[in-house]
Each structure stands twice: as structure tokens, then as C-alpha cells.
Image 1 (tube, rainbow, N blue to C red):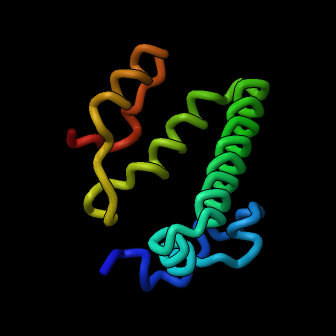
Image 2 (spheres, helix red, strand yellow):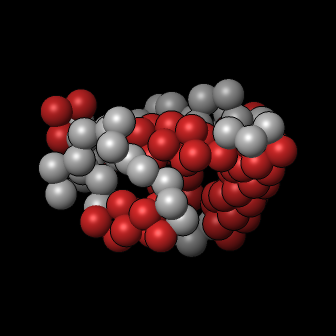
Image 3 (cartoon, one colour):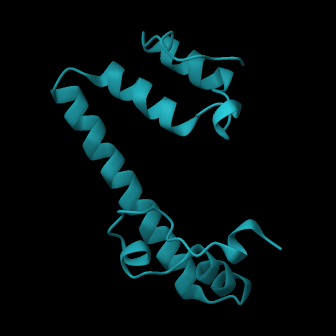
Length: 112
């Protein structure tokens, strides 16, 4: 059984996209995808676009407020929680990319 087949949460709590705001659960979307229902792909695409638009808004705000390095560190912390917290460690390519942008992740524990 796929992990999402029994997951009755929306994709992202608090997201207002058509999928999350419409109450489509991960289990329902999984079932729709397995049954080749094109609405599932549309809903997931809408969610992804809404997520990226929100992320870009938050990035632009951080740049305008001269706090982008803190934003980037917080984003990485949220995306890569570390194995102790049930997530993944920060990949080397993320550390290298931010180093190239002169953003240090030293406040974040990195075991990779």
C-alpha cells in the first residue's frame, strides 16, 4: 500500500489552493491518480503553482526587508529537519549553493 493511500490529510494544512481548500485528501488524490482521473493531476498542479507563488512572495518580501539569509536558513531548516526529527539531513548541494550565495548555514546542524 502506498503511504498516501491511507493519509486523510490535505496536501498542506492552511493552503488555499483548489485541492487543499476543496478538501481533497492525499488518499483521495492517490486514488484518483491510480484511476487515471485527470482532475487529480490538475489539482496537484494547482497546488504546486500556489505553493511556488507563495514561496516567491515570501522570498521577495525577505529580500525587500533585507533578511533573505535568515529566510533561506529558515526554509532549509523546515525542508531538512534532520534524521533525529524524522526528516532528511541537509544535502551537500544545498550547502554548496548557499555558500556560493554567501549564505552560511552554520547555525544549522549539518551531518552530510
